[in-house]
Length: 163
Image (cartoon, rainbow, N blue to C red; front, top):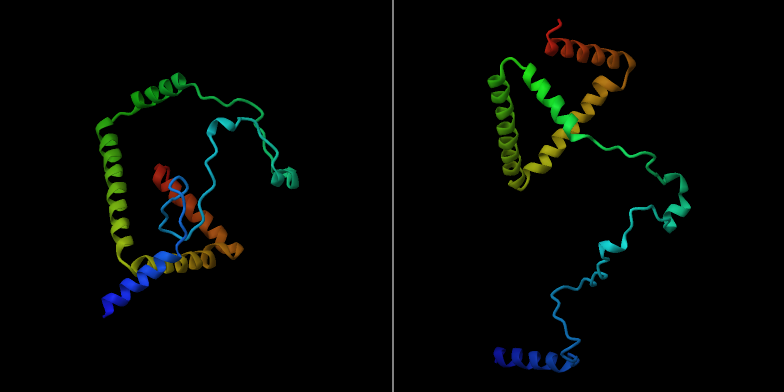
């Protein structure tokens, strides 16, 4: 009985669907509106065009004044000169490789944490709380900003080895 009612309702809905010619018929699984056609990249030019928004805000327009190109030969010569000055090349390579591996492993760890359903939101709250504490502790008052500046200078001297 239920199957007969279901087939009767399906046939009723099939009658209500208007017939569209095959050339116009498209299948869509979504109620979203279709996107406008893509504009080809050949229609864009390298010059700045005034759009209605830029006519309203002319102070937001920027134009390049000079060509800033990088001489790759000079860059490689400079890097080679600096590499030749390095005394312990194996240590530098080990530290560089270790840094790349550490970044890769931390990316995997963050991806694993992000896949746990509630943990990313908790981590966002922890980060927001720490940022608020940092602003209150070091940036809000002039004396604490000076303290932060002296701490940073001391850390720079310690890293550079000039302490």
